[in-house]
Amino acid sequence: MLPGTTEHGGILVGYRTPNGLHIEDALVVDDGTAARTHYVRRAKPAQQILVNYLAISDPLIGYVGEWHTHPLPQPPSPRDRRTMRLMAMRNSNPVALVVAALNPGTRHVRLHGLLSDPHPASHRLLGKFSDITIAPGE
Ligand SMILES: [Zn+2]
Image (cartoon, rainbow, N blue to C red):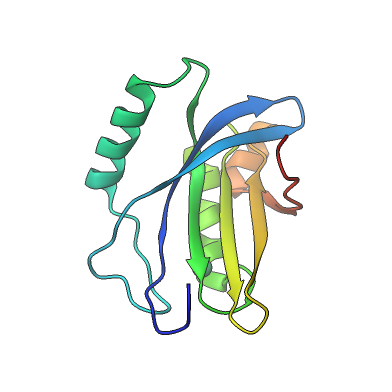
């Protein structure tokens, strides 16, 4: 994606592992109001896309988080961190927020991950999460 186009995003599906999450797929949820530096994940279309995906996937697979792009090589914003805090408070299982930051100069994508840690319960009350390194899957 080049500068000037809109941000994209959607939901992550996968399963929990002893060390965190395995992300199986990143589903695109279009946002008709998306702008170059703005994307809102719409609840209704996201729910429909998730239901359709889960209907034909392995029963172990489920919702594990959210993702979106940044048009420049920038890490998760303060707004992204606030969003992650709410996600951490609302989900009793670990969830992730992945930002795919694009570098138009080098045409590289850098993945930034935030992972919630709902255990113990006090972590969930505080919406605790950590910055994580995303390891490419096999
Ligand atoms: Zn962002």
